[in-house]
Length: 334
Image 1 (cartoon, rainbow, N blue to C red):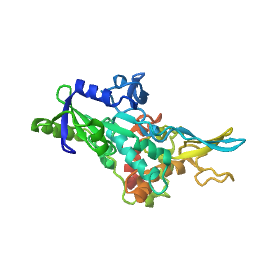
Image 2: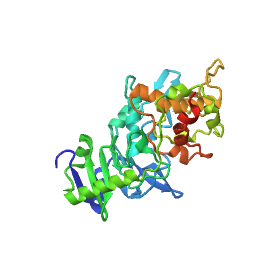
Image 3: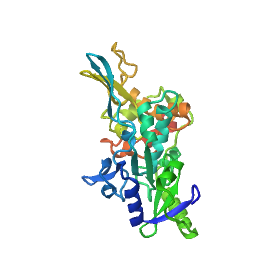
Image 4: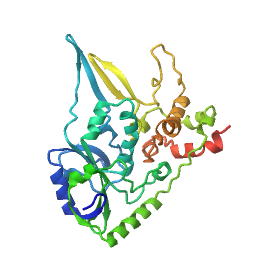
């Protein structure tokens, strides 16, 4: 099997292979809880869901934990915490948006100032992706450079075709080494079916975000007060976002802890002196939009968004980032 060549496996055979290669690894995969899919650590491949919609959470938290202890202050001085990062892990069935989100956060955590823990977890984790047969009603991945059949951030991509068969695409050398030479070469019929399914999946993406070319010129517009008025400042959009990465460092007794933070919260930009450059809610919501669609693009060459739609789907007041960003040209420009 040459590198990058697509192969075909039956579901039962794929299950046996996944079960075999994941032995001795920590396994993370989608499971159903109260009728909704979540990514969770699981005991074995048999616990993983194979047919599911976009999970409530992404895989970000398994590389950038919600809470991590940095060190403890003891009578003998500082005792650093060194979390276990050398154990082999496998993420099963990441959707393309979540896998691609890793390549976006990589730019921050593995860039000029590298995060040792994040980098170690990335290096020791094989990401097995699962293509989306159909986009969900909130998805807009095509607008931000993604695709329901995208492979960015994956080591192996799996696509369901035919009757209980799957096309495997070895995306990286690590994925190829992990899976080995398994499966039969995809024939022209299967390859054609794969391309047909890909086209159909991309056509199923109904939402389109129009990102203004000159977003900075709308910075002082009253538009941001209007579109942020209904926001409850709950932070669900940020905590479920696969690319949001803001954090705070706090002391809990003798422990210094890094934990997720969000621009939704009142205290997000408040300084020790009490000064707050973004004291009003609209300023913080504006910051969220500009960070994703202006600042991150300027700094790293990609938008800080993968178009998963979680921020709209799970927002209690259904604040719609697609409508808000797409309407800047019409309502927010001076």
